[in-house]
Amino acid sequence: MRYNGHSREPATEREMAIETSESDENSRLARSQTDPLWLQDHLLGTGHDVTTRNGTASFVSFKGRQFAVTCRHVMESASDPDVVTGAPNPTVALHIDETVLNLSFFMATGLHVTLRAPDAERREQEVDVAIAELTGSYWGLLTGKKGKKAIDLDNWREPNWPAVKMCVAAGYPEEHKEIRTIADREKIAAPMLSITAEVAGPLGRDQRIITLSSRLDEPHGYYFSGISGGALYTSEDGLVPAGIVFRGYPSTKMEETRRMNSPAVLDNKDIFIRALTLTPEIFQEWLSRAKFIR
Image (cartoon, rainbow, N blue to C red; front, side, top):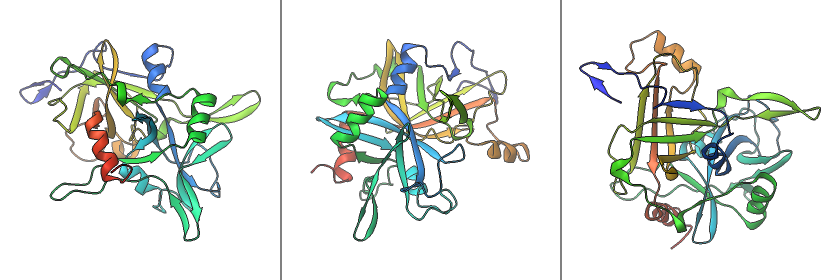
């Protein structure tokens, strides 16, 4: 974000945009590498509709293995009775039409969720990330039935960090889902947002956090709760994967209502995104700390 004394210059529409269309190549790429991650009952005991809470999963390939990556706080929300109300077996799941891919399974001791968060290292805070390995059958369904692709960290092109001025965050906001009728059947439509905003802090493989911040001339009307776990790309010659989103503002309409009743630094003309930097070295560290590799 650019400052002029205590005032902020609005970003131009050319610089900043929020898009729901998937007609361009970049949006199709982001859609193929992400998907809504639903917080629900393992046996759908609480149903599945537009009120079902969700985060976002990003698909990552590393050393020949495929993973679904989201945020620690999304994983932890699944066990919060205020988030997944009345679920006897709360979990997180991917969907392919009527097929449910639960990231969990039953054991003698009860339900086991396959998402794992990296252990906190000494003198370090917990990382807001959670990872599940996708089996061959799950990944086969996601690629064959839904056209998903993984962010390939084995052939990763490092961004030209000093030259990056804009980034694109992709995810599935909770408050913009709707019911659509397709072939006489009602389906839940979860639009993907592509949020382009200005870099507002240092970038590089030695920087663990990416911050984006832009300001529009008018309120944009979008709320970003649900995009946590989405992929963040640097906007160069095409999109280069560089992060996993863990925060977006404005989050919810309720948050905006609270803001209207109290002073706030940011308002509904602002875009504020934070992401964890994603590189092969960082991802390998996460996998090691989450006990996926030694």
